[in-house]
Amino acid sequence: MKFYDELKWRGLVKDVSNESEIERLLNDEKITFYWGTDPTADSLHLGHYSSLVTAKRLALHGHKPILLCGGATGLIGDPRPTAEREIISYETVRNNIEGIRNQINKIFDGKAKLVDNYDWTKDYSYLDFLRDIGKYINVNYMLDKDIIRRRLESGITYAEFSYTLIQGNDFLELFQRENCIMQVEGSDQWGNITTGIELIKKKLDKEAYGFTMPLILDQNGNKFGKSEGNALWLDKEKTSPYKMYQYLINTDDKKVIEYLKVFTFLSKEEIESLEDSLKKEPEKRLAQKTLAYEIIKDLHGKEEADKARTTSEEVFSKGYSEEGMPEELIEYTDGMNLMDLLVSVKIAPSKSEARRLIIGNGISLNNNKETDPNRVIDKKEIKDLIVSKGKKTHIKVNLVK
Image (cartoon, rainbow, N blue to C red; front, side, top):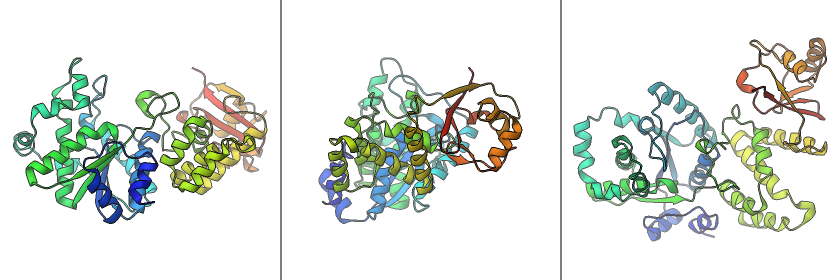
């Protein structure tokens, strides 16, 4: 199967600017392409990862990835279908960029070029931007963008209206600086991609290309994203590998094959074999377990994937799902250490017994061994925290509201 045909088989191609040429370029050439995101949080989530995996797939096929983190566009915010985004501070944007850069570097093993559009946008004067960029894009063309058209009735600010020009300029800059001829994004970015293609054509009289991937929805039909309240963060301090693993092994049978195609690097033959396993009762959850393991392994490494799988199997063997796991609600006190936590959740009757368990290598938090009895527990940690004693006792901990 040729590479472009594989992308289509996996369901990774939705909108295409020039399909015959894109097919030729991806199959037969080695091109430079880019994928971008705005730093609206200090971590990416599973929704981002679905398109990042596609970028990684292109990179493994020999194409050169440029991954853009929008220090400029993040200060404006791209238009949402319902309401304007809140403006975030320069300091927050810079902090978020660092977190995202670290995650992208890990996913791509440090082999992707990382850029920030603030670098070429910050010195642009308002008049120069209007003359150099705004002059080439017709207002009627912008009004016809789906995301803008949907906001006209409720109202859209000039800042959000102009967002597509800034992103279009990103494509132009990377085309000139890096010979980047293709942009690859989720389907909600199609309007911005075509603005960049139009700008390159009108200003340079050259052709650029773009394609989008369908947005991946959860089993309730919602996007994976923080605004939808169902974010699964790539930062393991925000969503533990175990928690993400548990979420994924509960994927509905109707969605699991779609997710295997999108999120994993398993072959067509391997995925079709897992599809067959759904029909066999003893192997009923094999597809879900494979999905969860492969994603955790790519994000956090084999060791974390093994830990998450082992803990999940131990919990299941005791008769609990995550929902059925015993839960303790505790009051947080400043300076709470690991011994205090074990006493609070009734894993140890006293601090001296808690110390003995910890030193004896018998305590894990979210499947990570803890050996320091005096380790201070951050309040942020106590959110769906799994406290384990040995292999058989697992308690989910939350704060009293």
